[in-house]
Length: 233
Image (cartoon, rainbow, N blue to C red; front, side, top):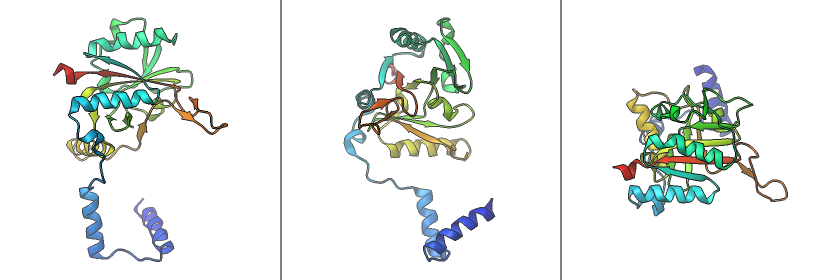
């Protein structure tokens, strides 16, 4: 693996007509990678108190055709999901990621919800996942891959339902990355996830006659159920 990496980097250096970095340049690069200073962060979200950041996140998400439900407690999530499916005449058979964030929700209180935990398959029409963070600045969801959060579950079902908590909302993308690095450090320096997905609204394209079509490359519906722990606190 190291030899292949060296070959790739060597080819890049040759194309740039540049040799290996000297000691000072390498030290500067290592310092920058360790410190990862943020770029310019827009003040629209960063200047707000956290409760207002949650409101901004939901407002921005709604502007890109994300539907929303805001509940006070985790116990209310199954009813919120069932109501959403019923109102849109969607199937009550769900595939759910085995994410620990979803374990404390009493799904059994709604026996009409048929839940299978695991990876999404072609036949699954509705999927439920958690997320890592919500970006207030743009109403974007930040989802990370792992054994308990398969990436395919974010894209394969036609309807994607995301359950999250208010405390997961951050102001900006930079804050989301900082939170992810801190979480990995707290986990004993665990490696970064293989995939990080940023999802803003349902899948869409305007390639065909410049008309917006939903569901072109992923779910045609994105629904967020936010547990409002900010209000509870």
